[in-house]
Image 1 (cartoon, one colour):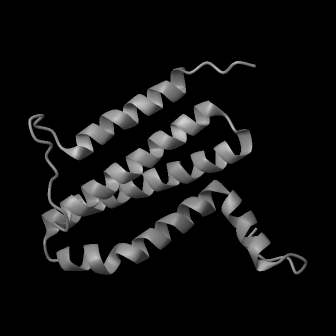
Image 2: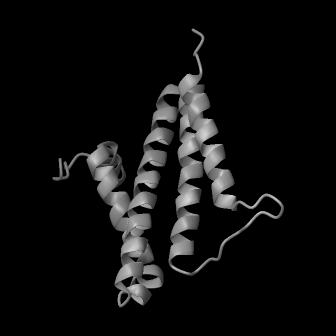
Image 3: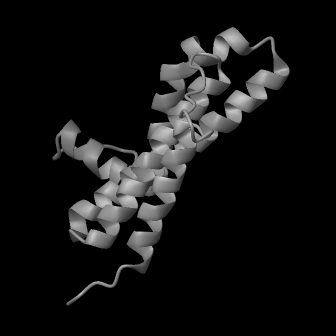
Length: 142
């Protein structure tokens, strides 16, 4: 699978390569880690407790990114409303994990909601769970 056939273009080869979920996960992981190494990881390498916390959020973001991509690709194939709701919930999870990653690396502060006592990330988490539950419980009419 890794050897390129001479009869297909690089674009087609890239599409074939990313159609395999393992290669897609590896590709997304490598690209994401290369993007965030300098601004997020390197400044905190000397703080062991912070770097472990940041690594947990990096892994969570990476999994959310993978689930979002897989569910969007699945929606493009099936055009199912259940899959659309599920992919929307994974997209919200991706935003939540990005907020948590930026907060854990002290780039972004907390966003409390006045009079409620919660943060935006908690409201988004509730919204994500509602979208996911709606997608799971929705009955498709044939």
